[in-house]
Length: 423
Image (cartoon, rainbow, N blue to C red; front, top):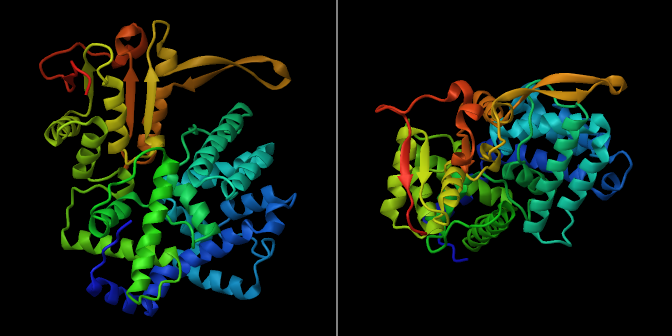
């Protein structure tokens, strides 16, 4: 990948790398996370019967038992000093910040809970497979996310979910945290807003990667490695991909300060609309103008109804648009397909039979897909969430939507988009 970094920027960053301020605010806390996670993934711990309890120790406690991880006293002192900027939050807060802020906190809550409910071996095996470099990086990322889906569902079956808990796809930022903590020479933290900025400014001939989350992350790592190589070529004392990522992040923040926009969403809310339109145009082979028009409608009306003959790409366009507006985070996009037997109990909420202690039949109120995504949106008000309903015309809508169904009228806050021909 061809990387072009202005010599002025490279020289300025080379000076910045040597400052106390850079060390304290940008590097040291990330190195502290690396020391903790690399110790967790060290061979003695990785192959130990205590590996599940060590995982719980790292993710559950603000300051974990560093002696149990086998970390030297010298490194322990460094970790304590580096994480002092997070106060009582310690390692947990530092990792959550690198895993997407508040959105990244979810994994730190339910993984220790899964281990408590005797699912530690599944969690341990998933982490072992993630760092097993005998398999390709895209494959490892997707397998790990699938593995955690299985653990989450099993935790739910065993009654381990707390009130208002429900499963969602593990974020790429969390996976990147684990891999970068394990080996920052090969992997990088994932912040899509900053990385997209890096692509546009330092690799203008390259396009933002497409494909699965694993494929996207693999290409992103190669991009950050190329940035590191170019900075080294220009004599910047880059130590690892932490420094290269910090260079991109710093320049990204500087660009936002130069052009403040109070309407711009936070990074975790998804990319800017211009980038969304560009990606939608590429994915659908539409003209940019058409993609812009659809995005503007989605932003204005909040809900869209796609209509047209079969095979014209309605579902594909809807899912692609939702994923892009959500910032490529699958946990913020829920897809449901209606059918003739679909009901209110499936979509909103309903009473379901369960087996209680002693195999006795009991009943519980269980949230449907709509209430789950509403709860997520309430918990994370700064993020965007999308519900894509496929085959909406096949269901008995009054039976499914209940009190949510309103008669159509002139001020109806939905807009029909007609797709008559395949794109």
